[in-house]
Length: 433
Ligand code: DSN
Image (cartoon, rainbow, N blue to C red; front, side):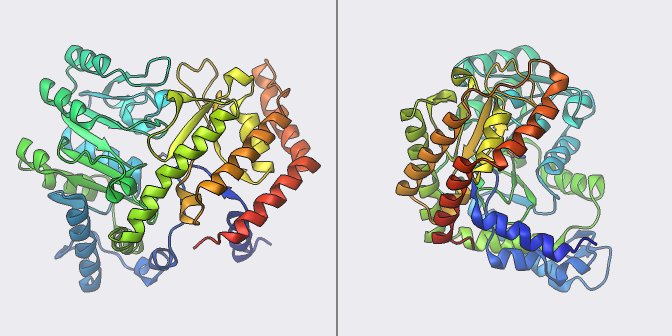
């Protein structure tokens, strides 16, 4: 019989003993985790503070109001909804609030570092229920803002939803705001990846230039899995009904009862973010990312855009002839957890892309700094070199089987086991919260 508590312990051990280099992951504090798993989850609270459809919400009202006020104070926005279940629902709720089906939306392509909900064609709500026009990057992986402007002038989107999941440079929010204003479009900044950096002062805030800001709360912000939708002064000026449209789109538009434990976790994460320690953590994330990027480059790897200005980097593996799947699998065998990722103009399909994406939020939370980045870069380089001759089968249908047998092979590889053991030793010195 499966014992769930045993599986949770196993996952805890996995997290303790490996390096979390997936840039969208992090370690929430014990207090955040306790809030999420608390008795708050027993309560139904459909509606908003003071206007619930259920009795018994006095304390929930207090918690939700606190979370909202704290988010308003820290992000300097006019209105906040903390109920979205996560990032994709939050973005869906914004589109549902402000648009009609068939309206034109514009965003950065997923393959260029955007997100599925920013208008990815055919398979997402954002690409199916709206007319989606998307821009990419130049071959070097950098956004050409002239191209963005030209596309906006041509297509006249009703809404631009812009944010990044794998774009290593800082977005020019001012320019994007100007483009949106030029064509009369809503501008939604999805800062899910960088909201913690924004609060730490390490990434520019889009607030002065955008109408709406969405963010998940579990990435650099280091809270629970959840999301917020924020309305800026500019958003209220564009339409005084914006806040109420957003709230109605969240509930009853697309959601039911809020996840109250999550709301408390968000409140706790915002309290933690309002501190000198959080600012230091944000600063160190970027220092670590830049350092790791330089070390990888010095070791001969090619980085999309040539480096990083934030918490993440994307390694283009095409010059060394490796597939992203092979790299991610072999690194996992060595205790280094990354994820495979497309690179600009990748001819390989998204499931078998030509890059890997790495980020430093998790390892920074554990207290690692430049000396550890040097060690980690050294391991990554050695591990990738160890499998330099591995090739994915040309025949698509054979790839799944190949990866399965490759996984078994690397799990039994003594060289990789030795690195995994060194990784475990390093991790022991930097306990997770
Ligand atoms: N899935 C997230 C990421 O890994 O970047 C984006 O939502």
